[in-house]
Length: 153
Image (cartoon, rainbow, N blue to C red; front, top):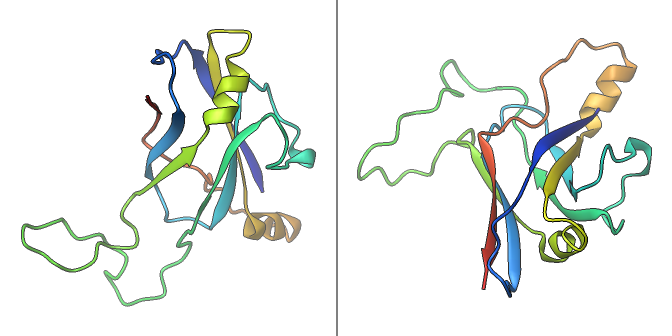
């Protein structure tokens, strides 16, 4: 399954002379299948048949290790509320955070415009096989709370 997420263009407020730029994706829901994503700037509808991280239009890539099904006991996949002084590891279902370095892609995208449109193309292996077999699996791959563009001077 390949899904395309397009975010509205905006005018980023960048510090002059930045040396690094990161796109941060936060609050990523991992209770779905694993997938990988490619980030594009100012590229309307990348061709899903020609996805290549080496394409100059691609600003960066990331991967999410998902947890599609729960195979544990009852309550196993219910996230516990964080408590003070709790030293246990967080639940694997805690929303994920990804930071993707996009410096060169951002510079290329803003060469001839001051607006930035972000497109994220995500693809998984399981969804493709399920679709071929007529599965009715319909959970979107990427579900996140937001994106943030960060630059470092």
